[in-house]
Amino acid sequence: MLEIKDVYKTFHPGTINEKKALNGVNLTLDDGDFVTVIGGNGAGKSTLLNMVAGVHTADAGRILLDGIDVTDLSEHKRAKYLGRVFQDPMMGTAADMWIEENLALAARRGQHRTLRWAISKKEREEFREMLKPLGLGLENRLSTKVGLLSGGQRQALTLLMAVMKKPKLLLLDEHTAALDPKTAATVLKLSDQFIEEGKLTAMMVTHNMKDAIAHGNRLIMMHEGQVILDIRGEEKKKLTVEELLEAFTKASGAEFANDRALLNK
Image (cartoon, rainbow, N blue to C red):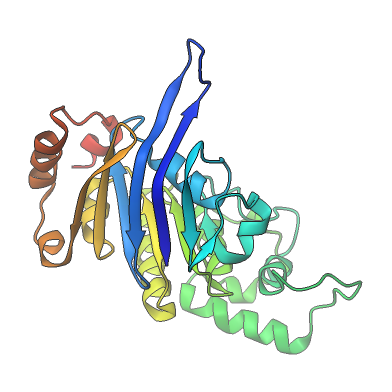
C-alpha cells in the first residue's frame, strides 16, 4: 500500500542550520498494516509522515501509494488518498462551522464542488449514527460549533472525518500528545476500532513507548533519519519498553534521546 524508496531530505542545505532529516529511508507497508513509529529527538519521525503527506518534497527517492507514484504530487493532490489527524486538536476541522457541516465537508471530499450545500435529512441521520459509537454525545449536538468542543471531542471528530471515505492510508501524527491520559486512551481506542473495522492501512507517530508497543502490528524505530528497527508479529506483542530501549542502543550504538518517551516508560 505504501512504498518509500531511498528517500532523502535535508533542510537548509549548505548553511549553518543544515539538518539531514531523512537519510535514505526505505519502508514498505502492506495493505492492512498498522505501523507505529517512534524515535529520539530529531530522528525524522514527523518529517517522514510529512513527506508521505506531501508537506515536504523529497531531495531524492520515490514514494508510491497503492502503486501510484505520488513523489511529485502536491499536498492537496495527495489529500484524496490520505486521512490525517494532527497533534493539535484545533487542526483538521473548521472551528466556526457546526459539527454536521464539518462532517458534510469530509463526506464530500473528492467530489466536484457545486452551489448546492444544504445537508439533507438523510445525511443528518447518517451523521448521528456515525457519531453515536464515539460515546461523547455529539450526535445530539450537530448544530454546535466545533470550536466549542473539548480537545478530546474535537480529536475524536477529526478522527471520524479522516476515516469516513476510507483513505488508502491513515496518518496519525502524535494525535494524542496534547490530550490528558484518560482522553488520550479513549482516542487511541477509537483509532484501533476505526482501523480494524475499516481494514485500513495506518501509520502512527508517537512519543509514548507503551503506546507504540500496545497498538498496531508493526513497530518502527528511527534514528538519524533512518529506520533502524522493524519489529512485528509475536515479537512485537511480547516486547517490553526495557527490551525496546536495549534493542535501540544495540542497533544505533547510542542512548535513546527523547525526554517525553522516557517519561512515559
